[in-house]
Structure formats: C-alpha cells, structure tokens
Length: 236
Length: 236
DNA sequence: GGGTATTATTTGTCTAGTTGTATAGTTGTT
DNA sequence: AACAACTATACAACTAGACAAATAATACCC
Image (cartoon, rainbow over all chains, first blue to last red; front, side, top):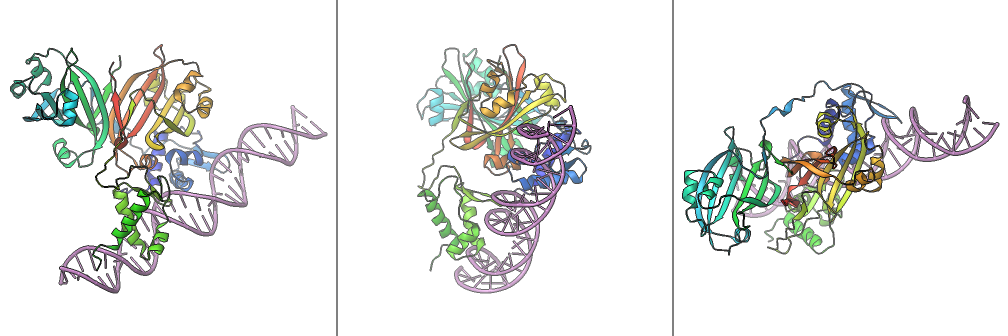
C-alpha cells in the first residue's frame, strides 16, 4: 500500500528538520550511517534522499567531511497545524453528546468483571457519539449495573449527561479508578459514525468509574478519532 | 484431481515449517527465487503463498532484504488465539531498549517551548527503540537541553536508560508534568522500525519530564504499536 | 612549535542480490 | 466466452558488502 518510496519520505523528513530549524545553515547533518540507523534503512536509501536534497540546493556533501546544510528550506509548508484539534483531559467530560441507543441486556464477561457482577446479570448500555464543533470526535459505550440503577435509562433519555443521570440515581460523585489506552484501526461501522475512512487510527479508551465507596458504577469504552483529538493527562 | 491451488499447498507447507520450528521468529526464509526452484513453480506463485502468510501475520517482508518470520504468536493450531498484551505503566518503564542514534543539534520551536529554551539552542537527541521480548513496541525520541547536561550523551551511550543518565548528570529524580496522547497512522519509516505495515495505528505520546524544582529536563515523543501495547493509567 | 606519518571517519562508487510491481501470454475449468 | 491459476519477462526500489578517496584527529619525531 505504500505508494511513496521510502527515500522520498526520508527526504521529506530531512527537509522538515531543516525547515523547522533543527538543522541550520552551516550545520553538519548526522552521518549517512547514523541516518540510516535512525530511519531503519540501508545507507544507499539515505544517500538517495540526500541527493534529492542536494539537487534542490538544501545541502551539499563533502567527501570525508560530511553533509552540510547550505540553505534554509523555503518551499516547505510549515503552518499546517492550524486544523481544529480538540484537546480533552483523560477524566473525560466532553461537552456535546448525541444518544445513539439505550438498551438493557445481559453482561458479558469483561463487563461483569469490571462492574463486579456475574456474567449474564442485566446491564444498561448507553451508546453515543461525542461531538465538537458539530464534528464527531468519539464513539462511546457506557455500561451500568441495571439492578442498582433501575431508572437510569429514563434519566439518560432526558439528559445525555452521564454525570447528571447518575446523580439522579443517587450517585453524587464518582471517580475514574482505571484507564487503559491503545491505538486501533477504525472498523467499518465505527468509521461510518465517526466520519472517517475505514482503517483510520482511533484512540481506544477503556475506563471504569466508581462511587466514593469504591463500587464500580460505569464501565466505558470510547473510540476517539486520532486526527481530531489529543488526550492530555494532567498529573497534578 | 487436486482442487487446491498450488500456492495454497505451498502456503500450508511454509506454515507448517514455521509452526514446527524449522524457521523461528526473526529467521529469514529462503529467497523467493530459491523457494520457486525447490517447489518447481514460478516466482509469482511463491509470492502468492507468501502474501497469504503475510496477511495472517506469520511473516514480514522487507524489499531488498528478504522475508522474515514475525515475532507474532502463531495461530497454527486453529482457534488458539493467544494475544498477549504487553502492559506498561504510564511512567514508561520498559524492559529492553536499543539506541538508534545520539545527536546534538538545534532546538525547533516546539522543543524550545517545552524545555524552556530559545529556538536554536543546542539540544541532545536520543533516538531509540523500546523492546519487549525482543519485539519492537515503541519508537521514541527524547530531547534534552544540551547546555545543562553537557555529558549526557556519554552516559546514554554507556547505559540506554534515561533515568540512569540523568542521575549521573545530577538529576536525582524527575516527574512527568504533562502527557498528551493521540492515535496516528504509522509512517513508512516508523513502520520499518516497528515491524508493522505502513498505516498501522500507533499510539502517539508527547511528554515532558521535569526535575523536583519544576525545570523541564526531557521532552519525549513515543510511537507505540497499537496491536502490541495497552497503556494503563494508574490514578492514585 | 612545527611538520609529518598514522589512523579512524566519512562520502563516493561499484557489483550483486532480493522483493515489489507491471504487462503479457498460456492453460484448465465452468 | 469468461474466469482463475499459473508462467514469463522486465524493470523499479531497496539491501548488502566491499573498496576507493577525501577529510579530520591524533601521535610522533625533529
């Protein structure tokens, strides 16, 4: 699937290094051997990338001495970071939400273990979409113990907020006791909801929230669109 | 009347070779030319068999180098899906590390802002690979203020550990003051190092570590392979 | 101090081998 | 007639290793 030759992507990376000031005019670049190590390719592939830079007048090589930056890259698009990029904290209160489905069903093994139930016990399931600027940024599924919160779905149907719904069920406050994060490729249905192409990288978050007594009240999965979101962990 | 295509029987034979240990993880298979000779077929037929193995994650080809057996758990005995998730703590303690390069260069804007320097100030750059059981799970780059730690690269070249190197430069302890996470698609060169295909989802982590006085000492980027790693956040 | 081999490092060049891809043709089956 | 499996050939992209040529750093001798 990789249409672009490796040497071109290396050349682009080196151009960026020069354009963003990591190597300045007169500086010596790392040796070809070092560059081939950092990029994980053969020295000849690096040489092809360097000869591309040399042709464009960005660098010039001296046999026995090294490769030196001769000019600043002018044609490199730097200001590409302007895209709207939502940044949220890991504890995860997201403003806009849209309810996709509210169901009650039997808990599977993972859900039961997370919530301290037995597999097959009834759970409420809240599927929804997190929005920012009218754009979907996350697809989530929250699972709650149904026997403890019989009226939760009613509250959720009136107000999409999980915090609010739990409050009306007697849980004044809750804290996140565990979070697990990894990166995944978007499945076809996820891609549809999140308005990205299938296979786009998504940040997969698995979390458990518990009441002040330590009893788990919510088991939540979320798939965030990597392009549109950065999780920030504030360790105070 | 063999209804099964030749390529499938070749694929089966190679799968058995791997499953029964005749080729082990990291080994290079015979070249396509050799395989086509021993099986008495055209090279393209062998290629079809190999692409079947590659799709199932058993092998991994590098253009110009050869076809290598992946370190992935084999699923040759059917239905035995053994998927071991390496779990590490958010503070970043990982079993093995491999140094790819150690350099000193000028800081770009982002690095300067993170470390409290001016753009162009010298920084030490440590490129490396995080391993678990010999398998690459993360590609990282750590940036340090060079003027404050003139001898850091010497320490790092002797011992890959960042913690150890900072200690020998007078930083007894440091804490993570900021972490940002998102999901990205692996670039061509990242994919080479991490032994995944280009575009595979990677967990991108940006972090800043500071000494007890609050002065930043390290600005680190890491790309984790989504398939092989789950970040667990311990909120204490 | 100054000049000179010596040695290690680094770029330049060459040859050979391997995988990736594209095009075209042949054979067997439905 | 259409399709899938396989063959044949050619070239591009990348790897591997070796050696030559220029440079830089060091040791050494006078």
